[in-house]
Image (cartoon, rainbow, N blue to C red):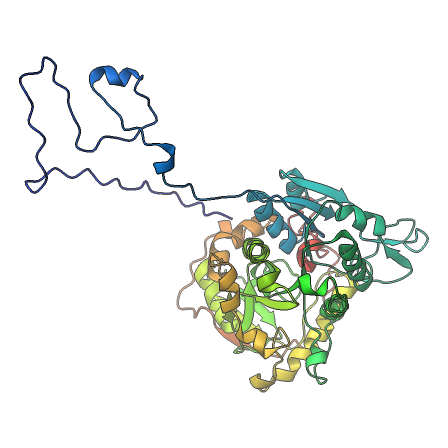
Length: 475
């Protein structure tokens, strides 16, 4: 999101006065009846000799076409890209950039509800296909064919919709979610990509930690993506054309609403506290998904499969910050003290989908491993090699990233306002506080969950604040 700060005008350097070292103008002759003013450097112009300017002695230089410097080629992309779950943070970021540089996009949306879905459907060169990627039997889903989030049952991928999605497409950016059976959806998308002859398939994946170390638990939502990745690698025609994108923690996850894991809880004194099970001193990968996924994926496409194909894994994260360092950066941006509070239990205060609840339970089990010894905390991406590639590999794709401090300063207050919150309009004078501090307290670890009936994850503070829908959390 661009800054609202006014832009200053560029200073224009005045033309230097001629000095004695310069060549003097040619002398005028008194023998001619008419005196013509001749310029030392005759100007290049689009005017011809028939122009009225020639009547006053202005004689422009007309360079032959072959002498003009060649224009820098700026070809317009002629390819079409298939995208799913297009109101999610990754997909929406990508679509905005893709159409801005000239690509055509075929975008699948579950529905047209919400700000982002309306925005995507109104962009030029975007063809929207509305429908679920997975169909359940009406009897099983309470009379609706739409799948229930986080549950599995009888049903099948929507093959007709998937086939239509790929019609006329040469490229694909696929980020699956668990609306329905994610693994079956992912396999169906890959199979149809083979039939459609997709030239470059970019799949947003994540690790199955238990495959890297049997002592590490498997995170359900991530392991589904890992299973899909394994299936794609088994397809001999698609595997060489595939790039796997691994994304860091979204800066955009933070909210002062009581959502689990990334709540920036507003305190009475105007400061914020972030409570999570991550070790306070272990760096984690961070990414502004809405700002940086789009340009990075476009560069993957421009470089092509000769650089990023054959199953290449790309770790997309632009900062490696420990929770304490993240709070310091956030504090600088938001202009208020921000403290990190370690708690091995994730506090769930609102209704959340079953699938996401299972993910949070698994996260607790994984990060408790490094509670006492930071060296035992599993790498976020499962592989230490991928962790070490951050942020270098991401910067190779896109250097104009937005860091956590900039996000907290320029975007976080706007997203909060879109969710109906007003804290940013209230002044709090806080003196003598340490910004980016840490609280290491387990006192609430065994407390009961506060299951508020007044807020549901994805719904903001009311029906009129749809800024953060479920797709934002899942994609």
